[in-house]
Length: 141
Image (cartoon, rainbow, N blue to C red; front, side, top):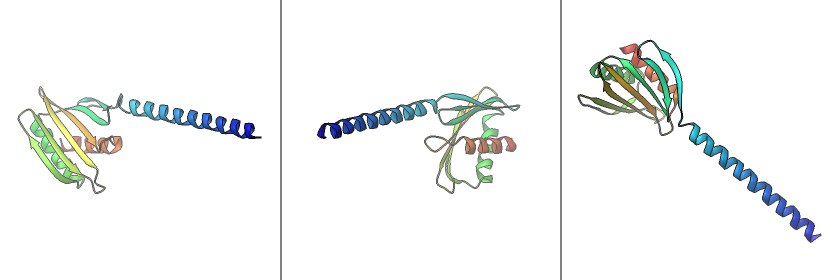
């Protein structure tokens, strides 16, 4: 009788260990795959939009000053709380927060006559909100 109970306990322990290992493996794969590069959409004004490690990345036609102003207006349109706006002659960063306290960072970098735009929402990223912000920036250009 004791042997049967001990065997069942061992089988249960092995089964639970296998499930924990499987769950850990799946979480690890999910974590690594979320950082991969995926093309999200293609737009006429600047080419492809990519989802890179939790951020939307694209290049927009327009100089840094113009895209910076459009980004400020887009954040205002969306009624995000402004935290900081910093700009130099070659790059800029706008940080704000949504009503649900999600941190939104828009990084701009001059690339010739165009501007590279990177939008990240929170630590892991929110693809849908990032694309909404990008669409609003494009509408302001």
